[in-house]
Image 1 (cartoon, one colour):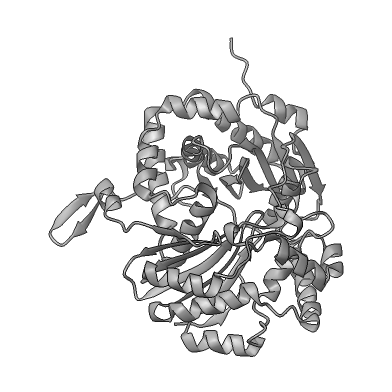
Image 2 (image 1 turned 30 degrees about the horizontal axis):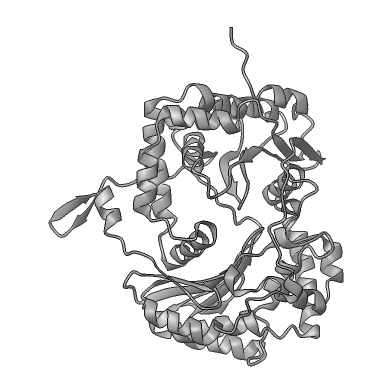
Length: 478
């Protein structure tokens, strides 16, 4: 097993619902076959325990020889201000550079000797530290995670080194136009609020953030009730709870001066931002409306709507036989290089949109087709459309849990978002209950006659005027 200490990519950790292969209708077990629904019911359940200090411990025993264990914390760039935006990302860089007990080299040797993989990532609302290792080494993994979270050294010399690394990463991100476009989309959609902050923060902050800023960030947000210790694979829940009490039982509950941080309120603004550069070979455009929060019951119909729009890349085969109407139009008329629909959920809002990359001469046509598909979702969804989307969505949900690490992440995020784990059987039931009328009504609620947020990067001179894009969010029929 490969061993390493690394950081997972943090900017584009989005909950995207993409079109994937349909779910299998049945699975074989020996000589017998069981239905898709029966196979979901046979999956192991998630056990959940809350410690005295409020830290939640959740696990799912799949009986494998490996496991993933990690700590997910309810904090991210949304909890930052303009002055310290990027502090969470910088802290993520510092996490594996040494603890009070272990130097960086000693920590890496510990991980290497276990044949494990230690990683972390930061998003707008979550921070995660996790390790994939052999099941027998779970106690050591929990111990090292406890050190990384509770006693990171924050050495001044190392801080200066990582500051330079962050600045280089900021330069690299500018070369990823999709990343830039989606960051700009958040900046314009949630302008004036902390949800518009990028995860990496501006370069000015990367140069000016101090060790004290990191300490204050930890003291303000690393509290037990905002943490979930999750594990999946060959794990014993009782053992994990015992390890949690031993390693995380002293994580504080109280805040200094009773200054309990709350999720800063957001405000969606229909608006646009354009960053024109005609020297770029391709334009990246994103359009989105405000969607519901991650805990809203409306997310299932919208996930099905996303599956109907689907995704496309020029490398796809199929052409006119693609199931997505927008993908067929893109392939037949050469409208774009790629597109994908997405839904980025947060605790009290979300972004429902489409991102596409195209040449400068096709921007207008692609935008018209994309918005037409949104209007079709509000008016002409059929039973066959919904049936196909259900298979696509079920297959997508299953494939996203292929492995102990995505399973562990799913458990932790569900506990933070819903307070419990929603099983695949529950998702299956909610998906089956959606009718074409529900999809049309839900899409009309969030899409029809709404002001969109638009972000465009590259040779975008041909992007329609905002008022024209706004007028395409409804149809006048006689």
